[in-house]
Length: 266
Image (cartoon, rainbow, N blue to C red; front, side, top):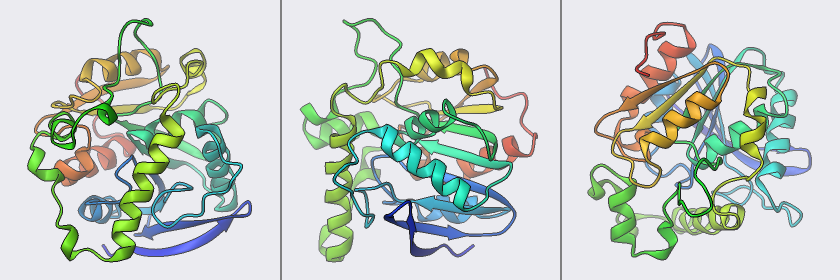
């Protein structure tokens, strides 16, 4: 299913949006990679769903307003987007940083959404002050970070000599924006855990079983902290199952949204 890229102005902010497919609407919120190596996943997701995948402000080719300083700013923008699109019973899918965004949206309101899927989500602190829940990949060499992020570190490789200036700029912008929004406190909102009871939607917490950046046990704790959630592991994938297991993840999402995998592993 072909995915088209365009731009839309939402609440005064011009954002890049990938979209395609027909059926029940599905809003996909990407992680720190942006849409790098996500083509197969988005196409698979668009089988049976009308996919809307915005690039967050500051990521890819989306505008970055000067007054956007926190994840909450993006969450409110996407709630405006959902209202503008008149979403009803939509599936909200968030990967990594996008999972954090999804949670920030849903603790404010679940209006317009019927199911949510959190894929290796960031955003919540479960350990004590002396425990690092999320590895500091910015304090290590890229090769070491790739070993934590991917089941097969070779998956992270890309040939910059074959990429356009726009593609390389997007990679740089994605890295800068991720650090800006998630640096302090590191990749979480200290108060978010308190409000997770407000996410009163059927939720699937899907996790790459080989994630060394945010361990599967974190995902299990997240599922336990939500009112109506179940956890499932995706073997052979690290922090980005959308890259390493795109077809499997898309199928999990489709089945969950249709009520076909109620017995997902706890």
